[in-house]
Length: 183
Image 1: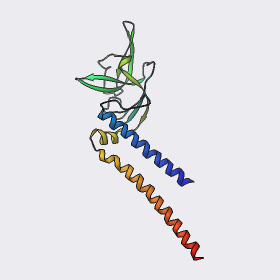
Image 2: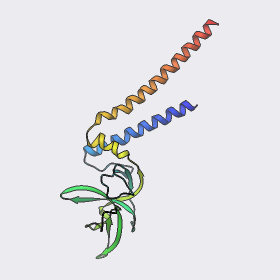
Image 3: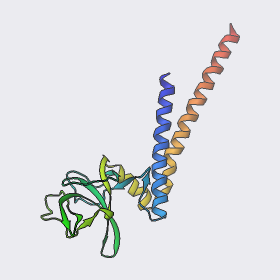
Image 4: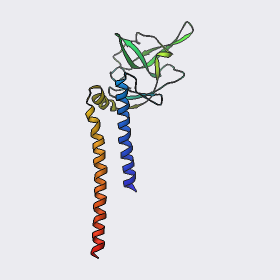
């Protein structure tokens, strides 16, 4: 029974890793933000949110109806004519002409003041709900740096593991049959 549970868990882990990387590749090729069930999976690329978020962490971002001061959010920005996604903390919520706007700031102690931009709700992808430490380093290496061949290593190892178990089972059954015939 333990082996069955172990095989199921290993299979689920391989499948989950493969699907996450596949979604990342498809999103990268199509120049989209990776999402599953309206949740975004983003890799932290800078140290602006340290110590809360480290470079290489994956953050899971969910859209929300309301954002308040101190929420950590991810939002789309155009910086130097490049579209980027930034993850910062809401520093202040202000009202401009009856519309709620947000001022953000990174948590890094070396960043002295709030960001130069003012956000509206339509700029915000969502609220950071979870983080997976350092898994994004692997994603960056495989997808961004185009080492896609590494995707096949977990699959090959998984098939080798499953194949080894099958050969071992057949060997044990054959050995049992020989022992039965000898008696």
